[in-house]
Image (cartoon, rainbow, N blue to C red; front, side, top):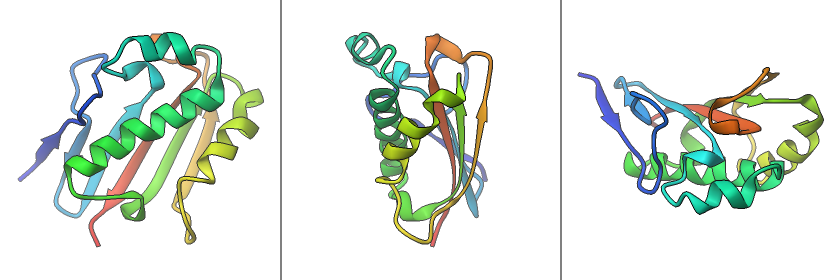
Length: 128
């Protein structure tokens, strides 16, 4: 049976769930800093890739918490950047979020992201 979850303090910019639990794996939708329930956060982090990346992780951790999971359950991360010039700053935040062994990761540059975000991050997690 498939279960869906939404994180506290995190909004959705469309008709989707923040996470879908398939039993073995949990798929978390991509989060941007602009999905904060507190709309003033989007204004504060606009143009600041470090702040946006931190906020993405805050949202993803809120979703993980709803399922009694944490970063140790994350097995795959996909990162979307509007420019690879943001890679170094994003990576500096990213490396503070996980311990070895690190999850697998893909990072790609895209033309643009929803809500004028500069970074979007999604997780795949697995229960221990």
